[in-house]
Structure formats: C-alpha cells, structure tokens
Amino acid sequence: MLEKKILHIDINHCYAQIMEMLYPELKNVPMAVGGNEERRSGIILARNLHAKKFGVKTAETLREAFDKCPNLTITAPDFSLFIYYSEMVKNIYREYTSHVESFGIDEAWLDITHSQKLHGDAEAIMYEIADRVLNEVGLTVSCGLSYNKIFAKLGSDLVKPSGRVVISKENFKEVVWPLNVEELLYVGFKTQEKLNAVKIMTIGDLANKTKEYMQDLLGKNGEMIWYFANGFDLSQVMENGYNEPVKSIGNSITTPEDIKNRTDAKIVFQVLAESVASRLRDAKLQAGVIAISLRDVELRTISRQRKIKQRTDISSEIMEVVISLLDEHYPFFLPLRSIGIKASDLSDNAGVYQLNFFQDESIRKRDKDLDICIDEIRDKYGFEVIRKLSTDLNKNLTDFNPKGEHVIYPVAWFK
Image 1: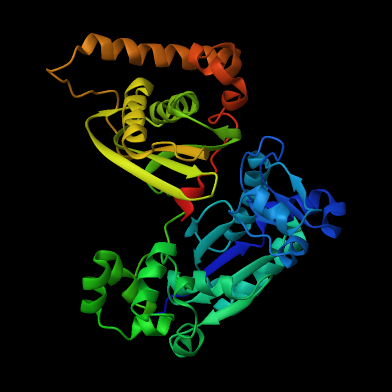
Image 2 (image 1 turned 90 degrees about the vertical axis):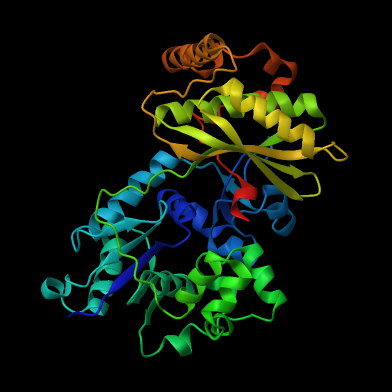
C-alpha cells in the first residue's frame, strides 16, 4: 500500500504579491493590502517583504502598521481579482490530482499519492507544480510535503518565501517537535496561553504528554492537538468541488470614528444585522446562536453569544439579541473602535419555520417580508437607495455596505 503523500501549497503573501505582479512599482516600497486609513476601516490582510522587515503583521490594525512603518503604501483589496488568480493557480493543481482542497483563497492541500504513477515521485511533483505556478501565472509559492495534512501545512509555513519542506515519518521529530507549540495548526492564542501555563512550550512537549492529560487539560481539543503533534492525522484531502459546510456567517467593521455610546453602537449594529440576515437567507440558512464582538479603543476585545429559542434569518430578531448582549456586557466605560455580529449553529430549513405559540407569527412574517423587500430593492437599484431612518443619525458611522463591500475584518474572530 502506498504511503500517503500530501502536499500543502501557500501562495506567498498572496494579496500583496498579486498587487506587485500587476503593479511592479509596488515591489520596491513597503506595501500592504488592507482597509481605508481615512475611514480607519479594516486590518492588514497581507504585506510584502519590505513591509515585513518593518515588523508589519497581518491581522493588525492599520494604525499599528503605520506606527511601525510610516511610509507604508496601502492598496485596497479586490477580492474578485484575488479569486481570479487563485483559481488560475488551483487549476494547475487540478491537473495533477482530483483531490484539491482549498484552505482559504491562497492555500490548498493536494493528495498526490497516486499522482506519482503519472508524474514521478512526490518531491518532483512539488517542484514541478511550484515552477509552473511561477512561469505560467507569475506567483511564487511555499510548499510542504508530508504523510498527513497537518504536517504538510506546517511544512509550507516553515520557510518563507518559496520554501520546499519535506516532513516524513523518519524526520518529523527532528523537524516538528522543537517548534513552538503555537506553530501547530489549531493552536490559537488562548490555547497557547493554557499550554504555556503548564510548561508546554514546544510541539514536542505536547506530543510527549499523555493523551489523557491533554483531554483533562483541554477536553476534545486537547486530544485532537495531541494526535496532531504525534503525526496521527488521518483526515482526507477532499475532492475537487467539495465545499465545507458553512459554520458561521458574520460581519465586523472598524468605524471611521469611535463608537461612543449605545446609540452609536445600535445604528452600526443595525447595518451589520441586515447584512448577516441577508446572507443567511441567500444561503437558505437559519441561526441558532447569535454572537457579538466588541473591541475598545485600547484594543481589548470581548465576545459574547446567546443560544436563541427560535432559529432566525430576520434582522429585527438578530438585533434584539445583539442589543440585549450589548446592554448586559458593555457599560461604555470606554468607546469602541470596532464591533461585529456572528450567526452560528446554522441549519438548512429551506424556508420552513418553527412556529412559536407565545408570539404573534404575523409580526414575524411582516418583519421577514420587509427584509426580503429591502433586499430586492437594493439588488435592483443599489444599497444606498433604502435604509432604516435610524442609521441616518450618524452617516459617518453607517455609510458602509458590509455585504456588498466584503467588509469582513473580524479581528476578534482571529484570536
């Protein structure tokens, strides 16, 4: 039986590299793809190597990036463009295997186990694909080759840019175990803190604990990352065309000015709630959990969520939960810099609604019909032609279209 050969390929600083390819003058200056500095909206989505030298990092705010690099050039994201070039790259991958699983726009796993019968050994395939992407599309990639998905992903992250790393059953203890534990996929900031608190500093420290110890420490997540650290990942690379079921739908926004009080927060949340509700309906999904994310001017973030009794895709019902969470958990000692809404515990109900004997369903139907009517008007005539009157209280805060502009920079969700 052939040993699994899994390749993970990452387009180096994808968004920034695409902009450099299209506008070569950007190759010579510190540059990042991100939001609008005048409006303070957004975060750093990608940065080139010049910006990296100044310490600019992805997912930090534009203000933080400019503090490090005052001469930083910011270019606006164009996701249709990024998706176009990403698909060109992935079409090359698909010539080698029917198992190409995307991990975001810029990354993918390839199962090339059986591709070796046609294209040579796995390592040769890795180099051939990388060369083709550079010569045919103009982009550089980093590659990790291993016998499982977790180590393949880790390998592609080890050497940037344009690394080619092989992690095998024979060398993984030497290559993987000395790395800091946060380098392991699914070990986020909070998990890292818990692990470091009990002197688990490296992936090897984690691997050498017992599975039972990790279960007691972190529950199912502890067991999962223990398996990963020891190379026991048996997950398969999905076939072309497979789409991971949507687990959540959300929008966040960093506003042009601080959100100083409940009224400010409410009108911004109104715009976000309409977007989340509309996207739920587009996906024919309803949510059972509503969450909010709040980030204050000192960059501290909290998130709170609530399970609701009746699943919904109606903006007024989402708003009711959102404002309740806001009132319960944020007294506005400090203004807010960014806020967000996320809907999760999603269910495909295909237009079927659970009735509630304790409320007037005609009101619920009215609110749903109103949402649909607003969507139809916006789809036909544009987002700005219709809006709730309350959002005119401060147009500087509410003059954005999170659904149409892809304003999805949820800083708190990355942590």
